Image (cartoon, rainbow, N blue to C red; front, side, top):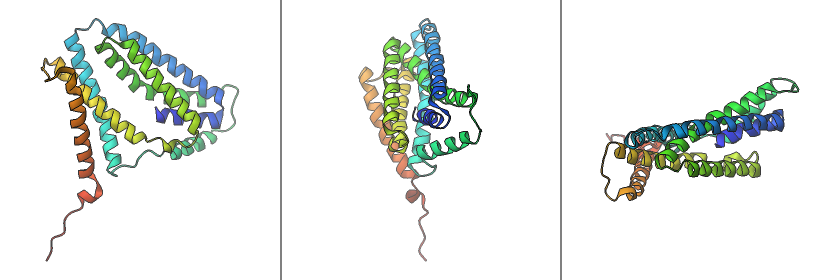
Length: 229
């Protein structure tokens, strides 16, 4: 969501807020339509199959997020500098020339940024909400999160680097992998000790494992030990 906010702010400051907000609004409507279409369809899927599918999907998303966050925390890949991304996108948009009455370039950039970033949220909302039979609650929670990010963007404006995106991605990744592991087991009819409480245990295990992997992958830990002569 932070990346989508960066794109919208860059488009708004460079090409005009009207077009940026139009692109954002159309993307949000399209994402809401996806939730409305996919949600009811999943209700008819058997619960065990649904849990297995949900678990696998969450594992895929969670492991992808964790991988990126771990590599950035370990210093192997560069962390996202939202201010640099903002400056680069602003410069690129400025090179497209004068703005016509209907700025198609700005509209497409804003729409694509919000829609593509929002697809991950839609998948999480539909899978989590349907499996727990709380699609409305999951959608409302996601909407609140989007509003919070938007308000944060309005407050910090160009100072997006103050938002700890990598830490947020790591925390979300741990949660997704934990829920994904739990529901994959549920779909395979695994009896977890403690029931739903086991999710908290999985969160702790994955968080500790993530911290350990970051330390092992850090440049200092990977330096070869010299052999004395």
